[in-house]
Structures are given as C-alpha cells and as structure tokens.
Length: 85
Image (cartoon, rainbow, N blue to C red; front, side, top):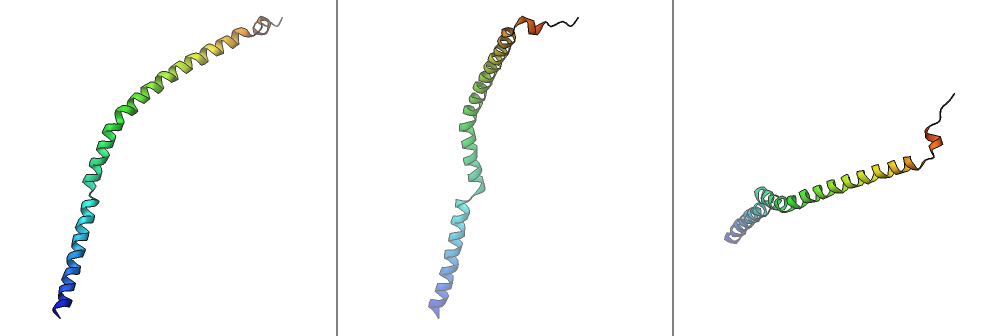
C-alpha cells in the first residue's frame, strides 16, 4: 500500500517539476527580453539601410528626370511647335 501512495506522490511531484520547468522555459518576460535584444541589435542596421535606400531613391528620381528631359529635347522641333493657322 505504501508503494502506491509513494508512486502517486512521486507522480504529482514529477508533474509539478515538469510544469515549473515548462513555465521557466516559456517565460514571457524572458521572451520579451530576447526580443528586446534582437531589436536593439537590428534596429541601427535597419535605420542605416533606410537612409541608404532613400539616397538611392533620390538619385534614381534625378536620373529619371534627366532621361525624361533628354527624351523631350530629342523630339523634332516641328512636333513641338505646331501652329494651326
């Protein structure tokens, strides 16, 4: 009889230890800490990348503007100044 009682207590104790290990393993504050570490490491890189992309975008817009102007100047003068009399 004592062995069944001992087995039941051991089973309950094992379940409690397992629950405690699971809670410690899946602790939300630890997950948030890891997320904060990741954001702290990644954010400066992303900000630099954003400014590099903005500079590239500005350069491309300037180049597109220049190409559009060159195409407009390449048209024959007769097409630009057609006057109906």
